[in-house]
Image (tube, rainbow, N blue to C red):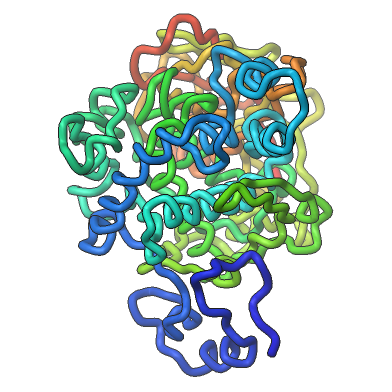
Length: 510
């Protein structure tokens, strides 16, 4: 009998391949689940706000202090799980290995060396690794909670912060903000924003809608396509990073080394994983043959068993034995031309579109701080001249993107930065000129175990389609053929020690 491949939960029933195919052909799409879930053989992760989700949160809350009591040398301990993501930011992996295990070799020390500080991709690793590495990380954590709690039916709830319900959108589950509660007190952390721990929407006061993930869910490629973000990077740098920054400060969820010490981290990442499962369910394809997908990582399973898994083994949640009580439907795409739709979704070069062309750029990087920063995007010599820089009537199928790369920070700014594009400084900032937002969650200098700070960052690529903004300027008879002004505004009071930098800002047609 051919069954679903590992990794599978030992408490779950293996699904014969022929039964899976039969279920896909016949079962209804009840509750927004895939037909595989209708076979009732998969464990279900629930919305934290549902009755089943609250039941699971109570199990989780009881398991947290038990894991904390196990101590750092135990592979099922809270600290071990935290350190698998990233060690305490006040020290280094090398120093912590020596402090905890001493100088002599041991089996546990080897396992710690192979698991700790392996978070992908927040310190310069391949950005494509984000989804599968975190899926495996959450999967083994969930198994450990089952073991510690003695509840084989436990599944990790998800925090549905993008819900259309205003009572849930951006609002922490109430179980996480009760420091003195005898059941849920272990889920509280003081290292959060005042909005988060007050039960208010964490996006309150921010321009735009930081909880919106429509653009990301409309992506048709997993990986980036030249100047256009793919689904993986769009979620990672977008809603994923925004939640971290809006929830936590520099000693908590807001920074990579401490994020995993907050119990909220896990229900956040359960929801991120749900987004990936939702994108796959609505037609998004994973690059199963990509070379990076064959990379292997080590995790600590229940009872400290060493588990080595390829990233490709995490491409299908059902094959890992679980699903979600509800998936996110594909949003309605904005009305546009067929050619523009292919460009907007990042499929241009895959469907015969033109190669990207640099049409404007900043002369230097931008140092950000507590006030707005203006950056001139200047026309590249030889690029097409138009009434508004970036437009080209001869190629209406092309889109124009503001592309930012090389984001660096010496500490977490602890705020989002918002981008506006306008023709000149004389024009006031308006909602019509709003481009989007960036965050520095994965842009802080860290020692990821090797000690070389210069190797700790990737390009931290952001891309925003600004075609509609430019077209609106043209319709309003605005004349800006040689330059546009990119204004970057902090969405709050940033940490003065952060000194965030955007090294490269470009205007690209593709």
